[in-house]
Amino acid sequence: MPSQSRRRFLQQFAATSAGLTLLPSLNMAADESAGNLHLAPFRFDVTPPEGHSLCGGWIKPVIGVDDSLEAIGFVLLGAGKPIVLCAVDWTGLLNDAHVQWRSALAEAAGTTPDRVAVQCVHQHNAPFVCLDAEAIVSKQGNLPHIVELDFFRRCLDQAQAAVEAGMQKARPVTGIAAGQAEVQDVASNRRVFRDTYGHVMKMRGSSCRDEELRALTDGIIDPQLKTVAFYDGDTKIAACHYYATHPMSYYGDGRVSSDFVGLARKRRQQEQPECQHLYFTGCAGNISAGKYNDGSQPVRQVLANRIYDGMVAAEKNLQPRSVEHVGWRTVEMLPTARTTLSADALQEQISNPRNSVVNRNRPSYMLSWLRRLEKQTPIVLSALQVDDISLLHLPAESFIEYQLRAQKLGGDRFVATAAYGDGGPWYIPIAEEYPNGGYEVSVAFCDPGIDAVMTSGMQSLLQPSTGA
Image (cartoon, rainbow, N blue to C red; front, side):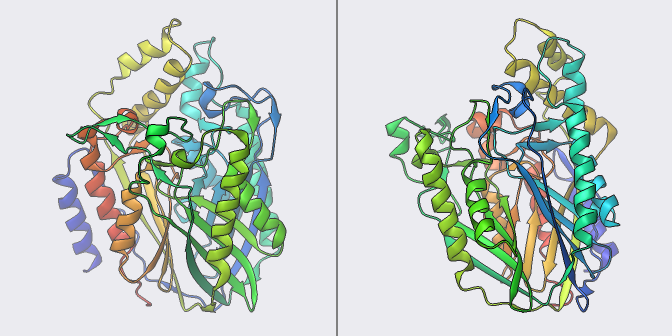
């Protein structure tokens, strides 16, 4: 379909989709040849200081560090303007905070923010950053910070320094490989306890001690851990791992941790120091380890071992092949808010000192979302295509069905999906789940129409490569 015809089609589609607009700024440029492809790794510490808020300020703040938080990524050079991928051990980056991270990395890499993907891993003993929400709660004078601004700015400075240093260590990319392996006894669907009408009655959270809930089936999950690795000759220089589950074993004790997925990544990194290992959380909005996690401290290492085993198994039979074409694609979405969100009502809730912290700080994220939409700041979906492999980047806490749908849309392509990009919309259920209620639906900021248009955006991003 010619570019102009495609854009007209998407505009017409958006006109009939309630609650969301797919903007006509679809970047579908022809793929670049990969004759001089290089990869520049970077990593830096993003561990918050003592006393800093965790998970938006409604759990215990930092009293200690069990293991550090990192931002890990790489710059891909030699396929048009540089491309940046980055995974951050934070709960989330929302709205302008996400834009600022992408802009800082873009500036350091000599590219534009639309060619940068920043995805959070979503651990909860970690910062949950929305600058607009921080401004809202700061005006109250009696609420914990969302984020300390000096710490946030320091992280951006470290990001730029790390990228600039990494650019001096760029290595040729001569090959790529993809693999997958089933992870045993980690992921389980949170929304499995329903009445006869399909309404969600109880949620199986990140941890669960209700034996009735734990006895239920896994439900809809993606059991596969996917790995995409880049090579310089026979040397693996970067490995991106993807798995869909909420990555918390236990939290709320004030002790910072990258949790079980971070511990697995760090173990793999220690074994292969010459390779940059990145971990991306997939579409885990309705997925957790609750069936297999009672929240006790020993289970953290058990789950870490299972993720680690999945990484090793996915890498076991990797067979690198030469890279012919690299493409970067983006789609911009501009959702509209659910009609249940009212700026005046949210401000009243935030300002009421009788409300709990969670019922004051969390509405500040909702109010920030409404203000963002007034400014018409879009959400960017993106995909890196390397021959018949696609690395898809989605926003917020998308439901697992989007990840499974992306794999079908990709056809014969190997599709690895990272969610938890721009966290502005909070949860993104599929349309069919809105009538069924449950926690995730209750805190979704967008109307059900987001399903149809995000799916259309994914389809555009996963079209066959012009060079394949």
